[in-house]
Length: 50
Image (cartoon, rainbow, N blue to C red; front, side, top):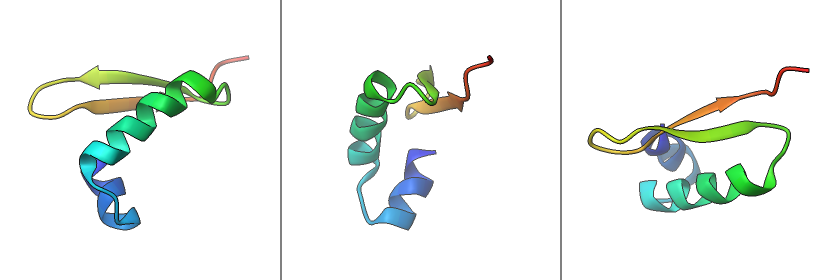
């Protein structure tokens, strides 16, 4: 996921990953968590169920 966001934003995959980690801490509108660590980190983003 990070590589696709990076391509569209001009950031590196590492920068996207750093920002995703920050967003996971400060953005209550979404549940953002590391999902897989195979060759790169995959992020799982969901909206909290009310």
